[in-house]
Image 1: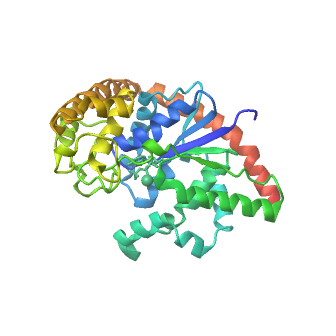
Image 2: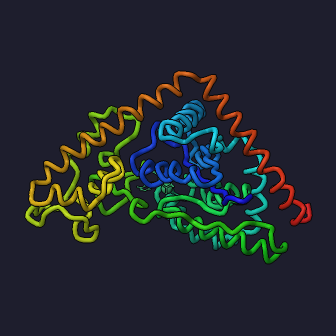
Image 3: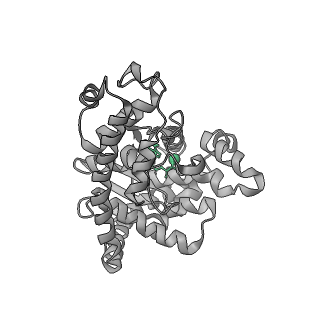
Length: 333
Ligand code: ADP
Ligand code: NA
């Protein structure tokens, strides 16, 4: 292809994506679809690693696709599809499993964190091989660029190592070595209650998370009770080391309004943090309401959503098939 191809995906593990997913991932995807051939995937096979209820998984897969559309993914321009609809993901993952060292996979910090929480009996082999499936997702489309948040950097490094290893073992051109596309400024939206850790579906209690599909009143509450530093006399400025809470609020403010962070900081500097929070809450509501209305429209027309996803799967398969054939041929299959 003349244009670089990009691939990215999110798991349908919750009823809703959160603001960190939107700012760190979805909004980047939307910007990138203008200038790249993009594939955006709902990675339902990845969600199986945490043994979801089947009916809930199916519903959340559709809801996640609706949120991609609501955020502005254009299914004419980009390929929007569900991972399990393209069997080649699982096929390539097996090939890559046999290229990945056991110790190498064991060094993934996300696996170490998640498996520590779940204990060895609660941890599936799928959770262990999750980054291998992710590498397959990317290589299956010869993707050269992968827009992700900071938390995925190590998995991307593994993908690059695997691609380079395959090119050495099986000949140049076996796999494209992808670059991570991590936009520093938004790569890590922090939990509103604990600005030292990232906003995540697994955040304790979830009080510091803004869900894209939740009642906007809850978002207002979460923002107004956001943890900031105690001393308001230090003012409003973007300084993630000294003022992580305030800096996080400024990042979110900028992301949902498109305004420059320094301009926002200047506007609120010298005033109480309360003013910043109230206006940010308004801005987030102004973002959430139309987003939710668009998501509802897509969810209210299941036949159209199915059509979009079936068309995306057809187009994804057409790219994946020759790539998988090439891999099989190189591996001696
Ligand atoms: P989570 O981290 O909540 O489990 P996922 O692993 O499904 O969510 O992440 C989906 C995408 O959203 C990934 O590209 C990830 O890097 C990005 N992402 C997740 N949380 C954040 C965050 N707090 N800030 C920025 N990006 C994030
Ligand atoms: Na993550």
